[in-house]
Amino acid sequence: MLATHVDDVIASGAALFGAACLVSWPFFKRRKTMLLIQIGIGAGFGVHYALLGASTAAVANLLSALQIAASLQMSATSRWINYLLIPSMVLTCALTYAGLSSLCAMLGTVLLAVGRMQVIERKLRMWVMLGTIPWLLHDLLVASPIAVIDVISIVTGGYGYWKSSTPASKTSCTGGLQGNP
Image (cartoon, rainbow, N blue to C red; front, side, top):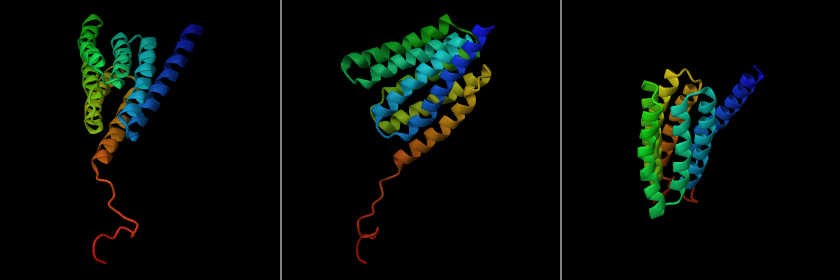
């Protein structure tokens, strides 16, 4: 009985850590910083889902953390590792299949993997937001409270995407006046 309670506390703590990373990554501008924070998402949620017995989601998150680490290095070798991890994500779904929730976890993970391979921050943001939608469906299907965090992440991700598309302010030391006074 005590072991179950400890597992629940650890699962909740891991979920909170992953949630903090999930909500905060869109506020950063540099690709490397965004990806470093996303490693925390994979690690936190991977432990959370493993302790809850959601094996597809656990393995998908841990594979994501590995894929993010490879994405940080944009060498020819790391690019191949990224591409090879995508079929392993699909295989994970097949081996741990538990219904529609497994398909959602796999689709979300693959979309996120494609996003993390993007070198342009705006494209990375778009793909990661797209990948969060199947994860939201997964979390609703398995009744995970992380679904609320998924919604918040989509909102903060949308803000980050919008913010990355707005041109920098064109004010000068003249108080913003351009041209003739």
